[in-house]
Amino acid sequence: EAGVVQSPRYKIIEKKQPVAFWCNPISGHNTLYWYLQNLGQGPELLIRYENEEAVDDSQLPKDRFSAERLKGVDSTLKIQPAELGDSAVYLCASSLDGGLHNEQFFGPGTRLTVL
Amino acid sequence: AQSVTQLDSQVPVFEEAPVELRCNYSSSVSVYLFWYVQYPNQGLQLLLKYLSGSTLVKGINGFEAEFNKSQTSFHLRKPSVHISDTAEYFCAVTGGGNKLTFGTGTQLKVEL
Image (cartoon, rainbow over all chains, first blue to last red; front, top):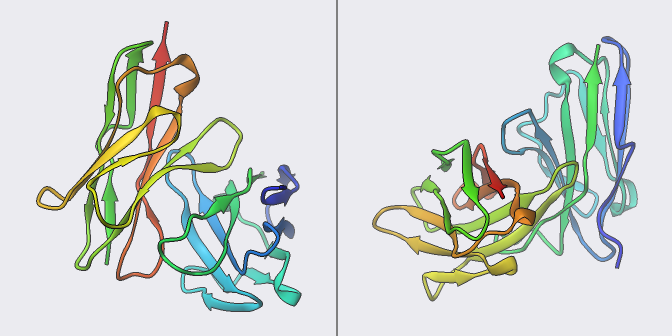
């Protein structure tokens, strides 16, 4: 069974440019998460989807970040415009549902470098 | 609010020696506790989790952890480490915040 797929794996852009990350969760998983992982830190939740509905986006910087999960399957996270401080790894995860006891399965992440 | 503290940022250990990675948490409600492992350039993988019941939890790759409510701890242990255990280990908690909160991670480096 395929795991969580993310692309691209690496992205280098100049500041003020837009960038987008794509995630395809495990088939049948209704809940999808986007996390931000800074160097030397643990992942921090940006947004959580239950099917196509964003149920927790309180940590998403909405002035420059946006996300969508059309049809409740794959998802895209966008930054426009990117800033130097956005350099980090962006992780996508999925779980069967939003139950706190459920294991979250993580993708390999997209490493973003903003120059 | 909930939080996780991993006091050791790096733990060096020789192969076949035992290891303990420390994790303390703070939460005003009952919690679920998790340990994840992250190998270089890979996503996080679940090692084990505590939901309820027995306080000693066994996970994959020979790891185990013990939930101690009075000390609000969930330390990870392995009796004999292998070079392939070299990775970053993250403790995480869910509780009243309805989300998974991670610690800052502990880099385990196994040396020959």
